[in-house]
Figure 1 (cartoon, rainbow, N blue to C red):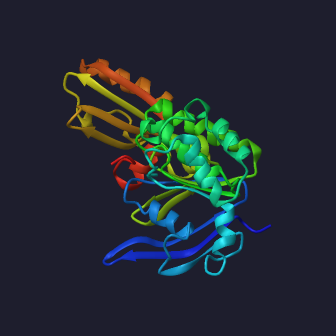
Figure 2 (cartoon, rainbow, N blue to C red; figure 1 turned 90 degrees about the vertical axis):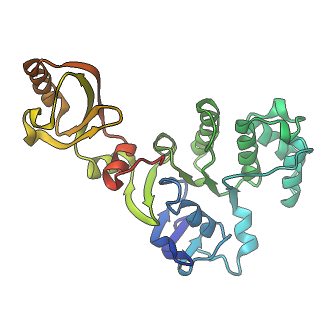
Length: 309
């Protein structure tokens, strides 16, 4: 069986800016994949080329084995798309907005009721779109993308700007959809938690290039050796005071927060040695956090900056 989406060595430039640099992807049917990266990484440009909004300078994109040219109508029928920002007609209510988009596909009115239930907007069906909250607007945009029962769902940062509760509501809708196993999804995001919670596979992108790809466990196992100890102390403590430096992978001190960050091979083994050194130097802990590596830590390790920068 052919993959749902095949992207072969695509390149896209805008004047002197290379937005996408020789990227190849393959998304299996029923798979949820995340394109994870900071703003400006090239995620939206990749999505717009897959959506047929833009054409790559070079390279090939196949959806169900078909290229866009000459197959536009057929591909539009199987795609559901939600862009970074969706603008609605202010004086149409939620049901009327869904009916408008449903008319493009000649769908029965029963489909509108199904979508209202799916995205939890039944109680807002008569509300004008201008009166919806940010989370409700995003759920309406998702509902529009789902109207035609798409085989492939393309979501470009669907929860950016939402509070944690509204973000979770969108996640729950997508996870319910995933349980059916009939929908393939590509999601762009700069939220590490979103990518790890929703998606089977994650592709980390920065400056138009793929830095790493795999499942969450594969990424953390392959690219991020070590565990993290973060602490601050009262008293004088310098880099020279750290014991057993052969067990430390990385040391960093943040002048702004006066906090040390260590990446160590085994924090259970190393932490008692560090605490003993505090006692020897007569310093005391004012904060301490010990944890496993996350995708955000992995991105910092790869690029020197955070995903949300």
